[in-house]
Length: 261
Image (cartoon, rainbow, N blue to C red; front, side, top):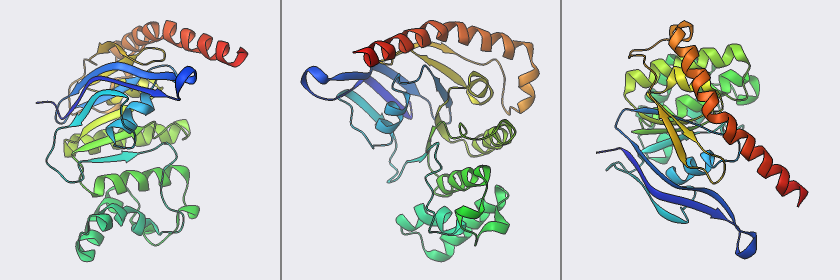
């Protein structure tokens, strides 16, 4: 049984003549422990799909279900970190556990364990303003994983980071998700990132977004960043770009027409 299942999901924004079809119809199944990456042109509904999965939006039609008995099955990580400036690093990481009413002693233990695992133990009492962008994103990842979610939803979490930090955090996330067997739905504009992280890479069309292609990177697990130097990696990256090129051009043309109107 799939952990995530979407059936004919659509999402429309606006009303009457000003309606905008943003997504679908879209069908999707993700197995337990699978890491699936979504790539597609800007504005094709990737983030909309993720927010529907997180329960932050409702589909206009169709159904998306998370097949789990857990009370809090999913955790979401955003591009802009989503951590609280007025809370210490420890309090940020412990936040989800506090919401779940985990006893403070146990919550502190779990939060500190994740801080240690992500190299942030020395910053437990610091505030986010004192951290670099990469460190703030590590706090966001630690907060999400501290609640031990069955499902991890990630919306371009490394997009705002420089190339060096992005590479480091990609490899850290790869190691973490392989160790915890978490089911992950990951949105990215980077084909390289998708091929490094994903068990499957799904290509979405221009708006309204639908899945138009699927590729399975031919690299086993456990996987490391060394696959970037594999000739198959480069060939598959080029293939994905050819699939995306026309969709990106179509989306750009549509946006231009909308601006002109």
